[in-house]
Length: 363
Image (cartoon, rainbow, N blue to C red):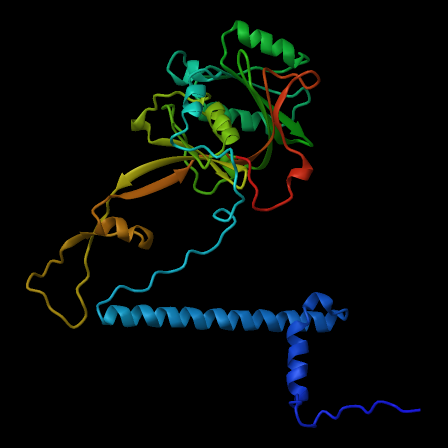
């Protein structure tokens, strides 16, 4: 019987492969998640992290050197790359509003909020609570009454919500806000447009009252300015108009009050500020080792390092002071008509199976 002779690695036609090269290839192919030993896995992960950090530092140094070289030669520095974020890499959405969308603007003239937003009637808000209220709920409502002009608080008692809606329609209220509490903490907001809806249910979290905000300001009775950010889709546009219908459309700019609803990754952040434009004049210190002709130093405008660019361009300094409260909203559902959990028709409902990607947003 004959056996096949094994080929020798050092025969002609075969290049020798050093053992170190093979080991290096194996190391590069092994991921930390493939290592079962906890200590070795942590060590490999830390090593890879350090290598990435060093590589990133080298790129930054090379970029800064190229920019410095370009400035010395009088050339334009190379353009910097735009960093990838979750916002600018979001999934494409067909419902994103466009400036030339005629159907959207035509729908605005016939929706439920057109009467208030076209100055046909002034907003009149009724605020109430759930049946079982807590001590922190009225404190939050007290601050909401200062934020939203022309709003009134009524105790819930044992009345059903449908009867409260009927009463609000008779008294010509334009919106109804219900603050829901759980375990002595407000955890939800129900905003109902009157008389024909819609009804938006929000989850409320991270509530901070005015007394808990450091160096807070006290709001005035002036009508505030309203800022709505990043409500880009059809659903977000509808929610933005619902929020807009709660506030008067003619703000009093002398009050310097601004209320902000900022949407980021489908979380709506609420902030309430007062602002003021001012300039501070201080004496410019003389340079060390140099004498000026005048003994008095020239007065110049100085501000914090953040506002330096504004000073160079001739704009005044903007100082803000938070008045509170501070909280975050997350849309749970949007329903046609007034509140009807059993027979109501829902425009949109958040479900767990919708959260398939971090780069998918609905507002």
